[in-house]
Length: 178
Image (cartoon, rainbow, N blue to C red; front, side, top):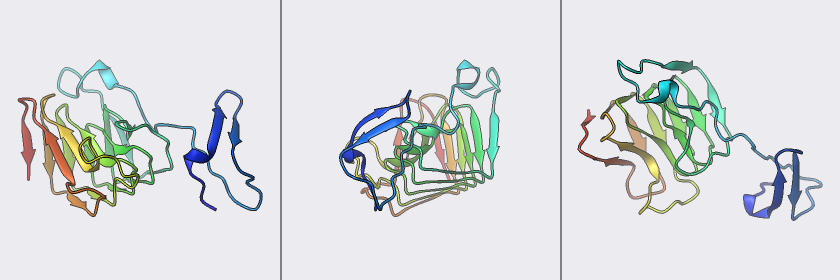
C-alpha cells in the first residue's frame, strides 16, 4: 500500500508521532523526517581560493529524503562523486562539484547550483515526478551563473516530466557548457 502526504493530519517531530487519516493495518507506511543528507554552507561563501572548503562524499546511495522544493539533499560546499541519488521529494543535488553521479526520480528536479561549480559526467533522469510547474523550476537541472559561473560538461539529461531538462539563469555570470 503506497500512502501519500495528503493523508497525514499532523506530524509531531519532537514526540515522533504521526496522526493519519486512515487505518494502516495490513499495509506499510513510510515517513521521512530528515530533509537533507548533508547540508550547510562551508566557509560562509562560494567555493573559490578564498573559501576552499570542500567536503567529499563518494559512493553513497541517498534516497527517500523529505526536502522542500528548491532545496537539495546535498547543499553547497561539497564534492559529490560517484553517488546514486534517488526518490527524493525536492532537488537531488546542489553541491559545488557534482561528478559521476546517477540522479533520478526526484520530485522536483535532479540538480542545481552555481557559485563557481563544476557539473561533470552525471546522468539526470526521470525527474519532476511530482509535477512542479514548468514556469517555475523543475526537470533535469537549473544552474544560476551569476554567482561565480558554472561549468557543465559530459552530462546526460533525459526523460524528465517537463518540456525542458536543463535551464540556466544568467545574471551576468559565465556558464560554460560542453
